Length: 533
Image (cartoon, rainbow, N blue to C red; front, top):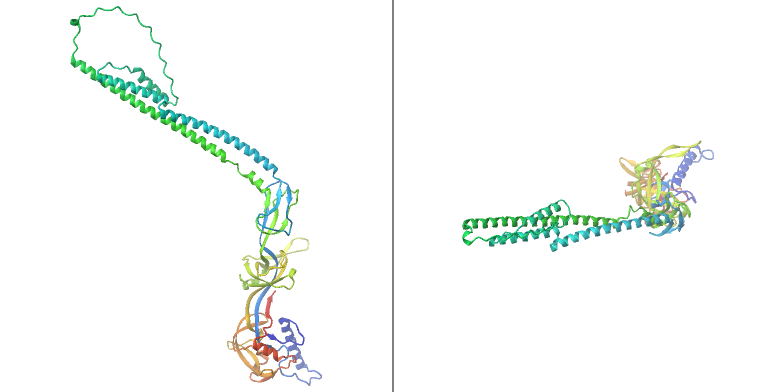
């Protein structure tokens, strides 16, 4: 939009509107009161400020806020180690990389405690391993005795089986029976001791052999005719009885041998459980390292950067015993402007709104950004009062974050910024004064002065228009009959009754080349803005 002010004017559009209003008031006053006795009348025509050349322009509405530049995130490095600081390797403003050395604390006390703890753990592990080895040796010995058949209970039970087998074989052959009284009793006694948990019994002591009795005097042998006659049936019955007795004794001995094997296996299994438990304790003693607090203290004595960024504060110096925070690092790979917006402007702002801003440190250089976060919770700003304390000023403000996009060169962390949040815009649309648009039967229209090329006189005509983004000063014409380069009348109410009539431009500074440039699109003009403050 090309608005034509007075000679050599450099005011912005809101100022132009004020000048136009003043000019109109002056003209009305001159017409009503007269100049030089009131005999001369105001010349009819469009004076400076009464017209605008429609041209392609950016019309936008915005909210202007103040804020401060900050990092995308900030991290404070802390420690729980209560020991003096030995060395500090960075200062405020230094740029650091990930894992870069920052400072060192005295860890000698923690190291001594850790050495004592490790020595105690080593001793406990050695004792546990020795106990496990003893249990394993007992288990191996029991297994070896069972495998070789020399286990005391098994050996004696096997001897009893052998004796019973010999007695049975003799009975079957019709020989004299073998005595087994002592062996059977010994096996029973041995099994009883094993069942009660005792070890292998010692061999039963044998009573001393009795002194031999004096040989009796030989008796006279009876004559064969005097020997009693043996009944064959009785003899066979006696032999069968001997066989049955020997068989029963053999079965009992074999059962006692099976019991001896079972008892030995139970003893072996008990020893295995003891050995397994001992080895588990030894393994646990070898891996036990306490609660890890001493190791953590020793490791945390050397402090490194958790992320790359800029050191914004160093809170300790050499010799200090830290009370928590050591260093603060800001990640300035992305920058955020933290600001607050009035409650009345919040409905017009949305995430993603384009933002332009300047900073005090960079002067007039314009940066770009976008709204990245709008707080759903507002608060009243507090101001100090006389006598101490604070009170609310009544204005509810909502925190808003603006992420910087594009160039960041020259922006300082903590620096102040003045940002314009663009809530609505129509780039490259025809821009006309908001007051130039009027409603006529539900249609939006403007009045134009249809003049020939290079002429300052034309006919007042109507143009139907479609409008888009607007602010308190201008409105974007997005469609309709208005063409670039047409001369729009700023105050249509004064000329609606003159449609079809010829009107001249009386502004001595009117430049027909401005009209030609707007028609050709060569002059885009400035940006029409309304900034809510």
